[in-house]
Length: 310
Image (cartoon, rainbow, N blue to C red; front, top):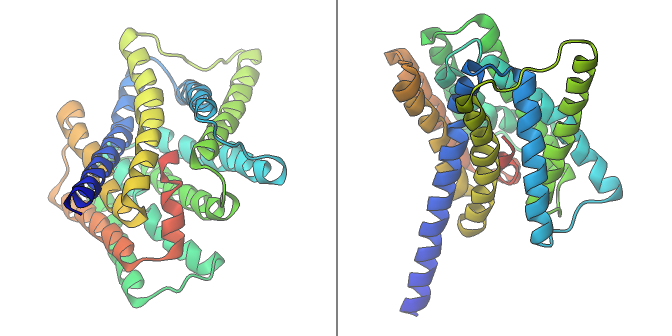
């Protein structure tokens, strides 16, 4: 009995480490993006390379694991998730990084659990309890403090909020259309669909004489590869591996490490400093997210399996 209990605890610890790794990898993406921009790439070049590399790598991993791919009617909604929803979210997020602090953008994006709760109540009939309503108010108050105390152009702030809204819609829609489909297959299809859109736009732009800007320095290429292989592929695989060991609720709680990592790295590597108001706002957002997780709710549990698609 003791050996079984020890084995169970070891699995929980392993799962926690995997989710912490995933959150750290996701949290570093904004910082890698800043270094890629500094090395000459633009948003279109960055996103085209990111999704092309991720789509190919995840497809190979899925094939090696013998994962069943969605087909027919199950396939096209997932393609739309990648080609429309994820393209929109990624554009908003990475353009926002050019117009606002990385730490501010990361914390604004983390409003998405609040938006998911509202959308689930509206579209999926989830009950909006008093606890959830109070957590939503705390989220909104925290975001107001973040924006009021942060450094960023209005465009960057607006796009950070737009990224959270688009991502929330993507999650709620995905909670319905991906039921019964392996998450690894879902993420591979999403990345391939997004890659197809960005490759098409890049081709059109190139034919028009305005090709996307690719990384111009070794450092920028390293940052670009880190976005694809560390902050996307590794983060996704670690997330799914941790999810199977911890379950949805604990995985969600540990995932709140993500914006903390972004804020810490932005301070250490980019010289960004948060004002006392921003610290208070960021803490309010994270507290509200944890409160929403503890309050439970089917939509949020469904959402967790898709969270690794950032």
